[in-house]
Image 1 (cartoon, rainbow, N blue to C red):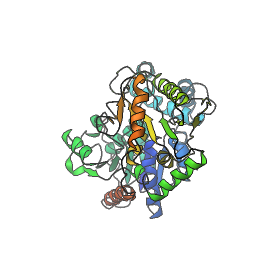
Image 2 (image 1 turned 30 degrees about the vertical axis):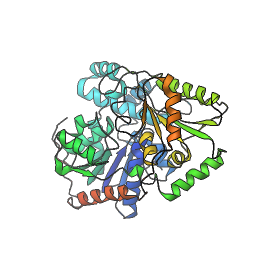
Image 3 (image 1 turned 90 degrees about the horizontal axis):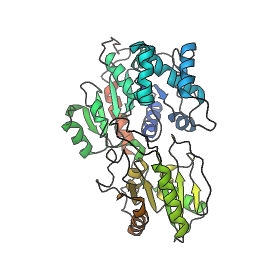
Length: 423
């Protein structure tokens, strides 16, 4: 339900979609059950997830100024025409583009803002002023977001400008994001997956007192008995036999340029991988392909013998327990499958390969040419994977405990909201 919180709240959550919202949503739900007041800024594709799970949220369309004539005009211009079936409602997309561009106009004037957008597109958005207005309105005692750029990064900067404590929950390796997360005062607490990543953050300048190993709440149920049972049931519902070999292709967007390094990418790579996988299962008896597109992709699925689609309505954790191998480029699903004990193959031909170094870390078998994909897949299927660790739900509780410890340091009505410009 779209709903802007009324009055001061304890915790403001904010997240984009995919693996980021699935980290924060269970934590927000757990805190709400303890009568801690929360608000959730759902960014773009995160809103569909929050809607599905019955958590109140709001978006850019609910923010102050979103309905102004200038913001609406800019938003329609830069969002482009409405695309039927888009995972982001068109009014939200218009407000998102329009408010972000309004901040750029306020900083540089419209001529330079347009030049900046022409160079960087949405990747150049950093709506600090819009986030400051939101924080001033809601007066949260604490801000919680992830390692995403753009609006989430702007929210951390705004919280720092207004002296509001903030917790950053990091999904995976943060190879690129460390450049801004390590800045002094970026977050009061940084929650990471494991000791290796904690050491990486400290080595790159983060205060050791701020870095805490909590795990990732999105992974809590991956190997729980009920998830494994759901995977077996899903496999049976799909009609896959015990001797069949079922491969999941978990796609993600490949940009024409890396958003941080500027390295040239190949936007055709995801579709080329899918085409190769379709060719493979068409010629391997008993092999099946399940195609799952990323929430940010707008791809029309084409039916084919032995090829089926998994929609976002299907439980992803059950799915990675239902299949025999998972193929990714740089999707978080690769790590999720590994943690569930399912063999992983990564196509190491992406601008994001160094950001998600799965094969280098022993999480996957890497492929450097699509001609090798068949044989690498055959080896992965023959391996059977590793035994998964027991599912325990500890990460959600660990992050919630960190939030509560920070809240204990901020009395009700205690946020200072004294602006000190640092962006």
